[in-house]
Image (cartoon, rainbow, N blue to C red; front, side, top):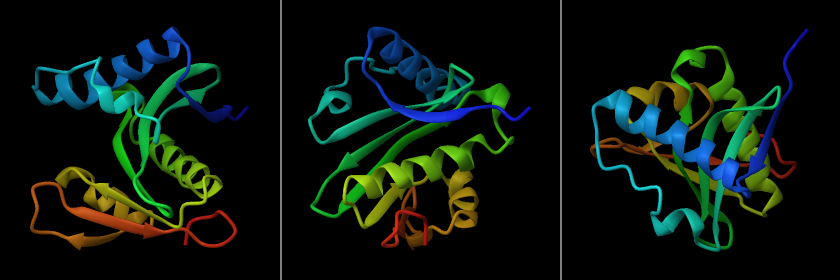
Length: 149
């Protein structure tokens, strides 16, 4: 039986704990980094949307969608639990984030991709706009019906 996936906005304290736990492990600790800040104010800004990917009732991934203009959003801090990577969950997460963004009226998304994730985004239809940066700037236009273009 296929598993159930849905995207939810972080709301409860339990959601926040899962959101920060996944990000801290995958994007900081697994990369040998320290200094993760669970109280960073950007997570709770009015135009920012902290999101959890839920698989069969359990949080497995995160992203944050920051609305920075009337039709522009920036996707940040995309992470899938390490033991669940390379199973299509990242692709599912990004598809759901794009649909969510379209629902907010956004027409274009940007991401500052980690070098090791650039190919992943390219496979999902993102285009590299500034490759000379530490984290290349990539963009994707959303089509008029809410699916990825």
